[in-house]
Length: 399
Ligand code: BGC
Image 1: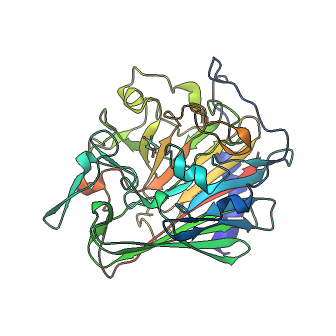
Image 2: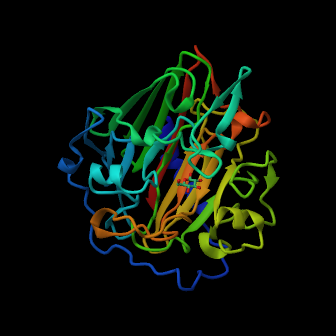
Image 3: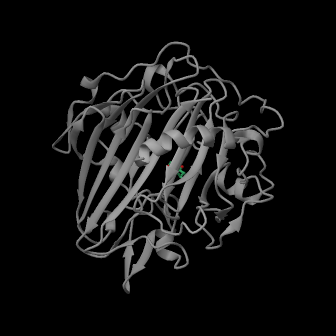
């Protein structure tokens, strides 16, 4: 059985095994309003993505499988713009936040909606790291730290897009030696494939001509009741992680790996996202202003090889109104669960919606934040002659 066929079959078992609900009761309060979609969502107009940015053409690529799902991807930032999947009644629901034109991605304050972030996704402490005895200085674009590749990361450049067929698009970017302070000419390739069973498969590939550091991920903001439909507090979440990397007040890992047990970060059993999100007596929730943490994913016994398509089940999330279920599989060692704590409702989303506070979550499959400064974390170094290869699958179904 090939890998994808295996996952569609395994999915049913996973759902029944992991999506039982141990929650005490749905979360209530002022920030729990939900306006679920009633009409079928549609894709943005492709013409609104035809432009010239930094002298390069931009476009919108549409992917279809034999299932009902449809995806739209732009080569500006290699961003997932729309992902339409059927809800429990078969109504097509757009489960990712995004804009309806390339211009808005360029001009709105940046949230990294749907983007591929890099060269180093997540944070590097004090924007400095040492590699082979040399210190590299990057942009400080997140307080004292470096975030998501710097001032003009992979989210804000034009990639070369090549539609492979109806269900796959390949995006390539050549990042120059010294770009944003990183060493080495890096070739990055990302392929998005929509399968016949409503899974979006993201494949990453990179090579370099000089030793460098690399941590690339997709930064989609999901709302399984539909983008812009309100809070995610009553989405049910399971993260297959016994441990996480605690952070300081600037969200840089302390270097320790600690158990989630007994903390609001324990999602080993399905739990409403909002059930403990305001437990600021816990310093981690206080520092993150909610959830903004890297979880150390459990892997099957003996399954120690990370990367190279060695996939493990990482996360299950279920929308409370749509009953849409998202299962995430990855070969990466970690996942950043970010609960939209910095969204303010000021960005005009597709279909006249807004990006309200905590109305979306990101699941950034990754190596750990600040790894270049933490020798005990899995390495993020890429050497000449090596090929970085990685896969993450976002599998959609209904309960
Ligand atoms: C970070 C958040 C940040 C968000 C948008 C996430 O990956 O962990 O702290 O606000 O990206 O920049």
